[in-house]
Length: 186
Image (tube, rainbow, N blue to C red; front, side, top):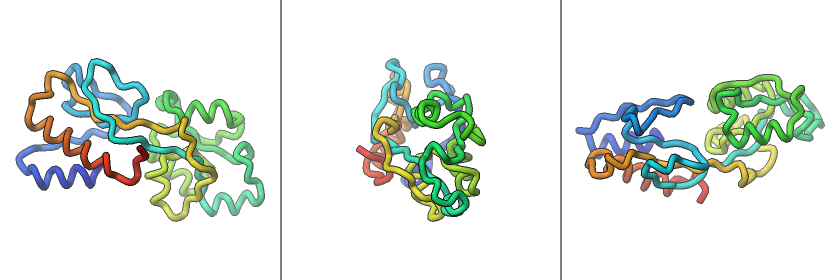
């Protein structure tokens, strides 16, 4: 998002952006935010939304970790970093619960970025968002992304704000930028 937000701010210097990044969804209905960019397979029907693309997910490990485990390359034999209970709704969390024996999970983390850092440090393997992991040369993709794990990205706003010029301008700008971002699949 940051390149798109920077470009928007440059084009519209009179509009102030407050960016909130966390695992808690602010309520657009209660006006805790004007626009939300969320990964969701089922965004709330009461909101207006546009879908610029999907983020793919795949298993990754660091080169150093893979060297330390030698030839053990079956996914179920590796140590795993998992999303914690606050992220249990994610498709990759459900995949881990179905696929990886619980005794292979050596760490849980409450952020997807934290999972990337743990994999970089060689703690184990993890199902990571491809745009985050592919940008790190130390990480190795262990399998192709599974389309069943794709996360649709939505730009959402409350219907009452559809005629607000600032909200409409920002929402449209983000949609246009994210729709052509090569890190999102279509």
